[in-house]
Amino acid sequence: MTQSRIAGLGVYRPSRVVPNSELVAAIDSSDEWIRTRTGIAERRWAAPEETVALMATEAARAALADADLDPRQVDCVIVATVTHLMQTPSLAAEVAHALGAEQPAAFDISAACAGFCHGLALASDLVRGGTARHVLVIGVERLSDITDLTDRGTAFIFADGAGAVVVGPSETADIGPVVWGSDGERADLITQRETWPDALARGSLPHLTMQGNQVFRWASYTMAKTGLEALDRAGVRPDELDCFVPHQANLRIIDAMTRAMKLPDTVRVARDIVEAGNTSAASIPLALERMRRDGDARSGDTALLIAFGAGLAWAAQVVVLP
Image (cartoon, rainbow, N blue to C red):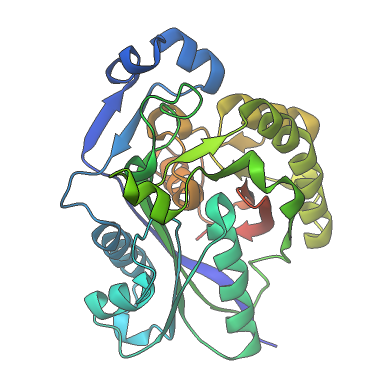
């Protein structure tokens, strides 16, 4: 059987940088309080012209260039997002057309912050099974559209951006088995606060709400077990790992997971959240790109990816970096 690998990586970061100081007055808070609770110093919010379609397309272009692949060679486009505000048609189909791909399969998936790792698992299996040769996986969000700037629990957390990878064939298994799941019993921990009709009747978009303390406890320890299971299924010991790239939800969660998994100090850990905030489905590729740009992630490194969020949903896999 053909194996799979990540062949290219690309991202799009919006131009507007929003420091904590812009948000504190509306929630009666401070820069120090936000940094202490989340680690976030600033985030990026999209300008009106930086739509989810534009950000996704530009991230995909960068990934294709990184993989030295022509868009016409793309067989499938998968977009993970919760902020494409049109139910249909899919954002993936729009992006495929904008790229100049030749009528590939194209569809969106909704797994919130875990969406990118879900898409990566699907793409890997499509390539390994022979259904597709090259698959674009894109995570993109404009969470600023659905953030309540007066909500003291979420106003400072969410941000915008896009990241993409090209998944293609390989002689070696460079994308490991996925460990994924869901727990709908706890769907209320992270959820959309209103239905679309209720929100529109009040002249706004629906907003996100989160029970932060419960999410922190769940993610810090339950997801550490998921990460260790992904390592085990890939046949990789913690001391053989080069990089740990968790969903950029909260710096305290990242540090707690690292401790709970007993990762050695030699493992380099992504902390893009400090300057990027929580970008949901885009956070894993954005964090990976920053590590590569800063020299903390190198071609051939072994990395553990783990994403988790609303649903509750989660997914993790070990990959070899392009």
